[in-house]
Length: 289
Image 1 (cartoon, rainbow, N blue to C red):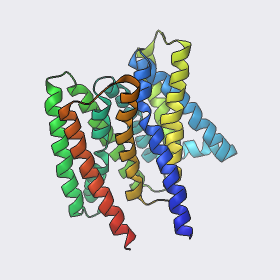
Image 2: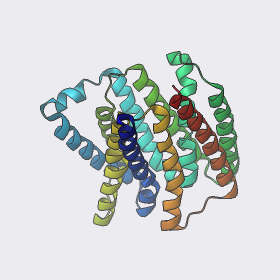
Image 3: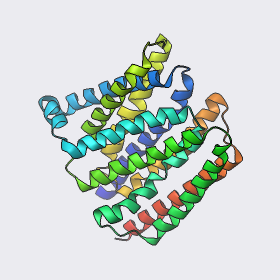
Image 4: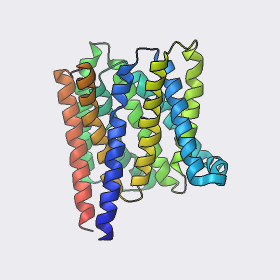
């Protein structure tokens, strides 16, 4: 009964995290201002949200928790900062479907990198998923070359690399807390974006929208995700990426009538098929242990 309860609690938290993540494209499309302004305000409100969470949960130990992250946590923070910056720039340079599908390749990259770095064996199902992933990437990049979306697709793939780096370091240094590292990442990205964001031209309505963007897709989403990690195995948590990848283009289609092209649709479907295949058999194998 305890295992069922854990699955229900963890699954609910993970699903809610996926819903929060999936709203990112909608928020980016909702404001017509410079991307550096978007980044600055997103990081400001995300940082405040995470700091408030740490103060509530850690109380007097908040500062200690932040300073204890060490160099592994700092690297995770830098990777988070780059992912935050690249996400907004990619969203404004290519289709939301491209960004989310290419980000989903992080669930394939992690097992590949964990082999040589952590000494973990890469199963055949993951190599099959890798083939699917690279075919999907090639299809999307092939189309993007002639449409001016190549840079956005490259940025989206670097987000997958950043997510993979975060995960590998977190596994290597299991005592490192991710939430203070996310706060550091928001601070780094916000400070890096501010000079290019000046002078600020965002309206009051834009600022409210960006506050919701930062709090929902970074602060709340990551807090839910890392809380769900206490209840669910990693292969199950991977499905959060699929929730994000499937729902994000749907919200943008509803709000802004943005439809993926044929090559984008096929490439995204191939990538998600590989990720789903890898995740499904990982969970299936885990359930028989």
